[in-house]
Image 1 (cartoon, rainbow, N blue to C red):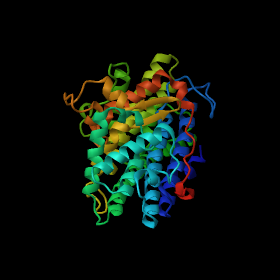
Image 2 (tube, one colour):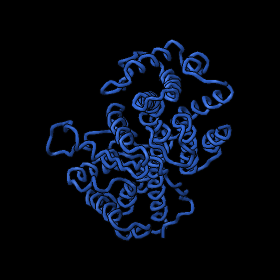
Image 3 (cartoon, rainbow, N blue to C red):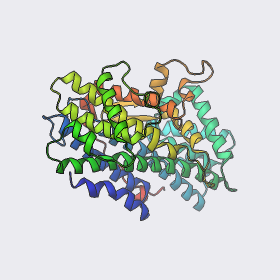
Image 4 (cartoon, rainbow, N blue to C red):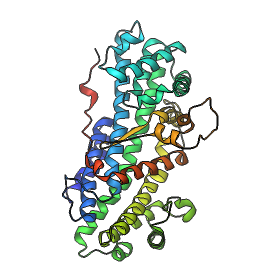
Amino acid sequence: MLLLSTTLSSPLARAAEGTTPLEDNRRITEGYIQLANAFQTLLDPDFQPGGTSSLRPNWFVFAPHASSAAGKGMLNAAMARHLLDAARGRPSLSVLEALDRVDLVGSVRLSVEQLSLELAAQGLPTDAAASLGALTTAMNAEALVDPRTLATTTTRLASLYWGAPGLEPLDKAEAVVRTLERTLNEGNVAIFADIGGAANAYLEWRQSAGEVTPGRVLAEFTLTGARPEETRLAYEYALAHAHDTPRPHAFDQLFPGMDGRSLVVAAFALYERARLTPESSEREALIAVANNSLAWREQHDAVQPAFSPVVPRTDEVSRPEVMRMMTPMLVVYFGTLEWTLADYAYAHEDRDGNPLTAPPTDYGWATFWDRWPPILDSFEGGYREPTTLWVMPEPIEDPLAFRPR
């Protein structure tokens, strides 16, 4: 556990040294995997790090998969930028020629090609259309099978392009690419610094604390911003309502004005309570409430400024609109379990009630209450198949070695 200190701090330090977003993402994902193993070891006495657990997974087991999904989005952005760089050296004569510069095959190639051609039909120059189409390479291509989703995505992406800063077509396209890459990277780093940093501090405290109980966590573990009275209130409420349906999740209504870091400390105390609870259904209920508490802090507080900055950057397009454009195609692989926003949207009531628009296009990932219920839904999928999450994501290679033909 002491080794986590260096691992967890390295992405932020290296970011300051000019590393690429994917280098940061790789270290963040690796750090989450270590934390997933460390916390599951506390919760499941039969678990061996590097193995699998049939016990309900802790929040950190979900985190590397979400980080990997963000990394794939950054890889898409890197690929798009490489296409733009190649076009500055030699413009393409067609969308197909532009896409031939990268190794896309099968259904992925067909999906990117279709979107790129739709963008070209809306007046985007060839290389700009191809590069923006490439932003969806690692997304859920099946979402675009619905012609309504394809039409909406094309319109939104074209609107971002036409409103982007820059005089030259390639500069306008690069502004869109830049916005997506920064949004994903800054959000990933912000979550890791906040939740990962708190977890690292907790594990260090725990190692030197001797016999740990939930009461000791509440009384002795300190986290800047957390308030002891709030932490105990959240912990006691969780104990009383762990089996509620739905389980506690609207924390702004339950605890108006509570600092999200108080929920983080309460979550660690709940993990300790779960560790000491022999009855399996009670243990898993406590883990789930702890996961919701950490996820609330992650989504409501830590990542939101990256998605919706107070002061937008002048060299970007709207971050909320970029995320809204990408939302219908979101996909996360929790090990061997696939979760898509499209599946979620089609399985729930159509939000706008308009048959002319596809349900997935009614969501915008930058809006907290648009993404919070789907995130909770993804947790439930993982709870039903807990062992699948222990197939951890493979590292995403830095694209600096990637060069378009």
